[in-house]
Image 1 (cartoon, rainbow, N blue to C red):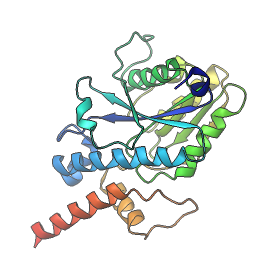
Image 2 (image 1 turned 180 degrees about the horizontal axis):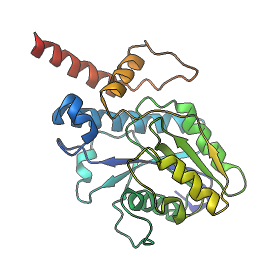
Image 3 (image 1 turned 90 degrees about the vertical axis):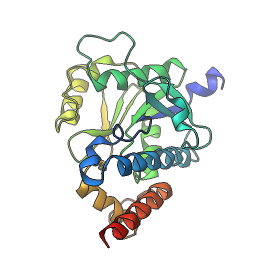
Image 4 (image 1 turned 60 degrees about the vertical axis):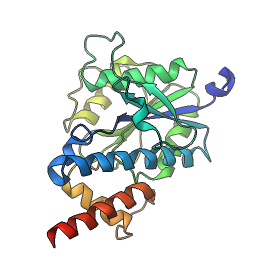
Length: 252
């Protein structure tokens, strides 16, 4: 891809750990167990990357997986939409001292994409397989408009499912209490502190507990309703149906 082409595109990277039982979707393990949680993790990845690919049909978007740890790239084989790139985002490059924890990985992903020459970079969670495709396309369009800004997709639990930037603003990841219900609020505050325009997208949810899994199940079976059309997430739907069938057999 030429530098001129990349400069006119928005790169979207899914923050993902290589799927491994006991290490993937750990917050889902109490609800379903380690092996099913890893199976769902494996299903979320193709659906999320295919969703990015669908958004790219209407917007200049390039899809990536921002993965960790290094050396497990092969575990993504067969799980990615065609054309999806891989970038390491383990947080190992030098960072300001106030950028800690998961913030290091997020900033690593943003800087890696911007260093590739893309005009904007988005980090996207891997826990929202039914996120409406229109939201991804809209985020890219907002970042394509003239002027510097950030785009935030707030999650219903107080975190965020998406953050997009046009430049390396390290302060957006500074002093954030990661994995708490104030992450989005603190991110808004960081943008205000540096005078960075922040545009917010509709809120969405993470599938990280039993209640969210029930909500996902309802969406995938067509029982959910709302103003936005959820992405169909066929791999997740098939995986969840298989897990539910196995659970029924065990209970019988």
